[in-house]
Image 1 (cartoon, rainbow, N blue to C red):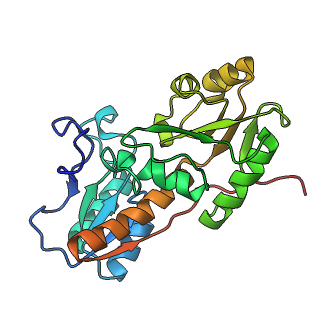
Image 2 (image 1 turned 90 degrees about the vertical axis):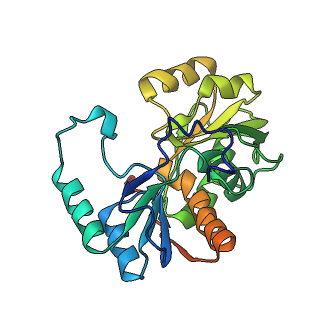
Length: 252
């Protein structure tokens, strides 16, 4: 990861070993978007002694929690990992931007978007797969349902005309940058925007937006990470899909 992630500042990155001894001999690797306890237990049951997570092991981020604070969930997860000899490593800053198989390009492929690789960028602009916001929302929904999301959010005039749509990584989406890149519509994520700021800004501009779950947008990239590890290192690597954290409830 250090070799391919030439854009990462490896002296100030979130990508590091979080639990266990880095010198542990790897038997099998589990890959998941988050190191939640149920996923870690599933990994142990499948014989994996290494767990690669995209997001942080702890919530909130360690740097904003009190240094002496240990939440019950964290204690339980750490204890389970230690008892089962599971090493946990975070792979975020590098995998967000790996061309073709990383988070951004994997998401574009899942959405069926054309227009080439984003390279090692965190945002990309593609020709819109539909001509209106309503059409775009319906298109995105067909691509996210197989990943476990039963509905998407739509912000703006449903019949607004669109030609170029931007996508980005999870919580790091920069709407203003996307517009400067030529986008006239955005596929964003729930963690990547706030309705009272970016949402209001988009409405004032007449910028159509479709919102999906953060975890859903990054699931294709995690599946590709497991395949990459298996191919690159000849080790058993298993992707543990986690789907959307929530379900949408509509009118009965």
